[in-house]
Image 1 (tube, chains in turn cyan, green):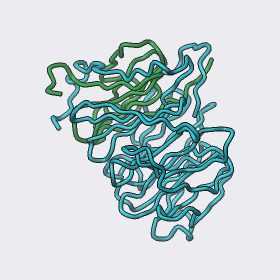
Image 2 (cartoon, one colour):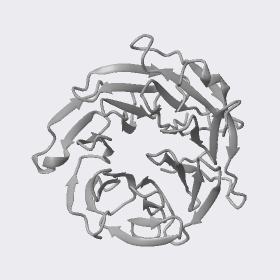
Image 3 (cartoon, rainbow over the protein chains, first blue to last red):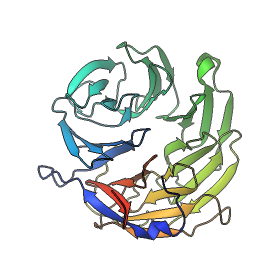
Image 4 (cartoon, rainbow over the protein chains, first blue to last red):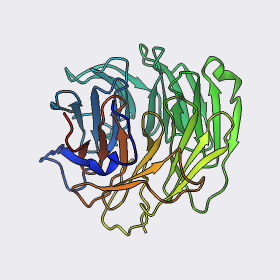
Length: 254
Length: 82
């Protein structure tokens, strides 16, 4: 990849929009992620459509998830398969191992009592983590339908896996980040960071940097923070006006 | 005021932090230079829509990014090969 610099950003423009003309007015794209090799983009929408984009050829395809719908997801080691959460409020919440080339469900994972909000596939193992509004984090073996480990928290946890495969970060109640060693999940967190209290701030996501050294915290407020992932020290804080506009008639479905 | 849950993201080498905005822009912040508390963005780039962008991701291999609003958008720099 060519290197990024301050000047190149102004050259970026939207080359392509996925247009789904059957979509209703309240359609939102809920999750977008590139595969780790950069070859594929997958996007899930609240209309039950999974969009797949080949970054090399520009080819687009879609998968319609009629019965289960599609919420948050993550890539697996194979680009043709994802782990995706259901989004149909009328059915029991499940996650599924889905072949997006053949539109074929390989296995369903059930156990959560309410909507699954994050999925993180462990890149090195046949396992993945889920977090849900039932305040649980579950660890799953990709090959079995029942969770192998469960832990309940005081609020809907936010999770991210360190790309190095060493640890799992869990954000709780918008004020604590706990880090768990994947080799000793049962020992509890090996370190916890208490975040400085911000007025009416709710954390909406935590993300490791690709080298695993930093943590990026997003909120529903105007603050974005970068922390040192080893000790919780604040490295950067960005404040933008990005999120202050008055909006009407807009529902964001997470 | 409705506050949107807008997710920020790192670029592949963590040099920049990207975030969408409620008016269809992508804001780019430097994660290496500048003050510790830096509210000024390196660039503010406008999409072809005025609706809220809730998520921006940068491609780990190609000079390409994607944003989420009511549809998915693919961004590339001008005079790019792809």
